[in-house]
Every structure is written in structure tokens, then in C-alpha cells.
Length: 215
Image (cartoon, rainbow, N blue to C red; front, side, top):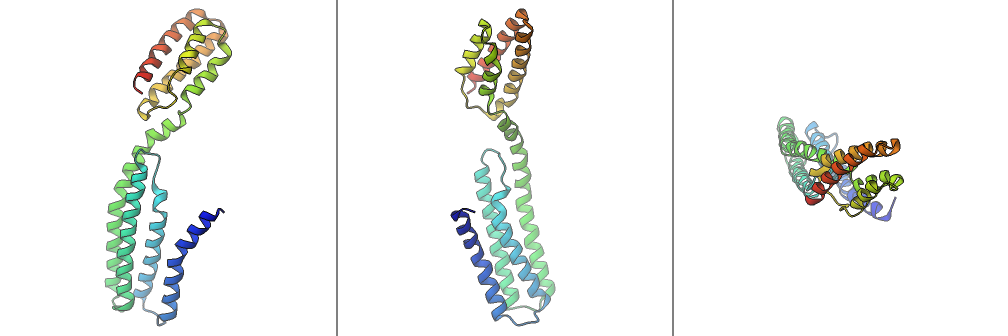
């Protein structure tokens, strides 16, 4: 465990330790059920706030999503803490109202958070697919490397070498199609099928230039 992680855990533990110390030192026991309801929901809300940054995916803007998720979780925690303190300090006998208030807050938090989680999950799918295809140029060059003795393959190799290594998630399908044609080209080179090589090099060159033009 790094020092930064240790310091973070220590910081996150301050509230829990302080709250529990005051709760058990100053509270009267046995406590009513409403008090334990407030106690439990406060801890759940605090855990939800701490874990909210882990909800983000690979989608573009996921950092902003993580910030907004943390903000919603922090607001939920503050509301739960406020209502819980009211229950513990002022109205410990109001069992039904205490439970109803916590359930309403939990339902509001879920309605606020779940649509964003679903949208972020959908947005992350093409990015995850593209993440697997990031070494597009490097992969193609590696496949073509053993067959550079062929002049057509050499020219295509140089074109890949000069192509941008950065990419765009919208081009993931095009890049996958180009790599499939490169596989066919490698097989043709292994079999000495010069006619197929010439045709595939032309198709790959055209597709690669179209891909590069969009970057």
C-alpha cells in the first residue's frame, strides 16, 4: 500500500471513527429502532459516496460523469446525515417517519443515479471495443514486417508507418476491417498469390487513406 493510499484511507476513516465514538459515548442505550435505522443508513450513504468514483467507465467524458456521480452521492449522504441526526437527537421515537424518510431519500438517489449509470454504460461499449483496437498501426506493421520483400507489401508497410497512431472511437469498425484485410494479405503473401496481393494492397491502401483522412 502506498503512502497516498494510506493517507486517503486514514482521511476517509475520520468521519466513521468520530461519528461512532460520539454515537456510543453520548447515546443512551438500549436505543429505539429508529435510531439504529438512522445509524445504518448514514453508514450506507457514506460508503456510497466513497465508492461513487468507481462507477465510471471508459466512456468519453467519464471523468465528468465521475464528478457528477460523486456530487449526487455527496448530496445524498448529507441529506441522510441531516435526517439521521434529527432522528437520533430530536425524534428517536418516530420509527415509521424515520424509515419512510430514509426510503424516500434512497429512492430519490436511485432515480437520480441509475439513468446516468445506464447511459454511461452504453457510452462505454464502443470505447471499450476501440480500446482493444488501439495498437492498430503497430499490429498491421508487425504482421507485414516478414513480407516486406514484396514491393507492394513494402509500399503498404510504409503507408502504415506514416499513418497516425492516435485514433477515434468512431473508426474502430473501419480499423477492424482493415486488419482483417491485412490478415488476408499475409496469407496471400505466404502462398505467393501475387494477383491477390496486388488487389488487397489496393483495397487496404484506399481504406487506410480514408481512415487517415478522418483523423
